[in-house]
Amino acid sequence: MKTNKHIIRRLLTVALFSLTLIGFMPFKGQAQDQQVITLAYVEWSSEIASTNLMKTLIEDELGYRCEIIPMSADEMWQAVATGEADAMVAAWLPGTHSHFYEQYRDQIVDLGPNLEGTQTGLVVPQVSPGRQTGGSGLQNVPYITINSIEEMSDHVDDFRGRIIGIDPEAGIMRQAREAMEVYGLDNFELVRGSEVSMTAELGNAIRQLNWVVVTGWIPHWKFARWNLKFLEDPEGVFGGREQIHTMVREGFAEDAPEVYALLDNFHWTPSDMDQLMLWIEEQQGVYPEDSARRWIRYNEELVESWLP
Image 1 (spheres, rainbow, N blue to C red):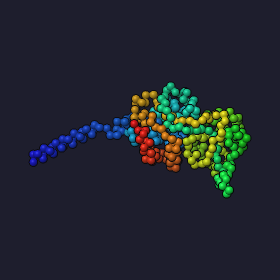
Image 2: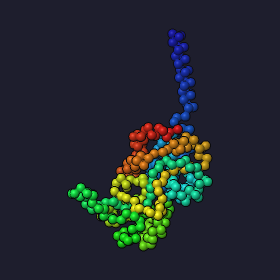
Image 3: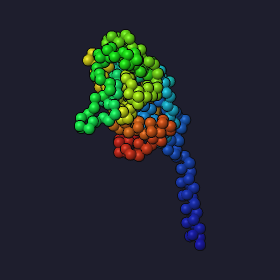
């Protein structure tokens, strides 16, 4: 009997000691709860997808709290440069955001590209009236017949003198204004708006077979929804293929090394991003974190390669 009591007493002692240790051991993320990671982004479909993906991983896998803040492009760069935000995964280089990079390059840390193969330019529908393919099996001619920005000046009335743009501070809007000067599009107006208003105009024009030209970029879900094409840019105003870079504020590596490592490892392809953008669009932009978690479940091996 004494032996049993002795054994029970020993077991209770071990159990209490273990519970004491557990009380001092932080649960996943407990130590990071006081630190909030802030990501800045522009409200483009591509950046909504990538930023929400990083937010979800920072919170679910690394245990930090993470806030994402939508901004215009110039505000986003300034926020990271001044330390108002910790990071962004939305720097389009070397062309689209080149003026921001030159302004802030000495105040930020460039972690390199997280996606390669982007493109910007002026985009028109490549859609035929009726069926895309006729009874003969040949493809019908698209209702918008031009192929180059140079030809736009001959179709001012067809386009109603408008180029449908997005937020005025976006790099692609600066490129569009330059293209209007280079190609002599003096009779056109560059319409300010947002990505939402731009895609709405594009969709309405396609349904009614109206001529429309918009500022466009890849990756974007509209290229999966509609048959579109970039107008040729012989003067190279919009540049060639680009990359999307990850930028962090100075000192971030020391303040949050795990998050820094995740952002430094983050790299995916346009097709990876396309899938997440489509899922977010299908949900009409509601709860993009849910779409991000769905994407993570389907891409566990890739995600594992990013985690520190």
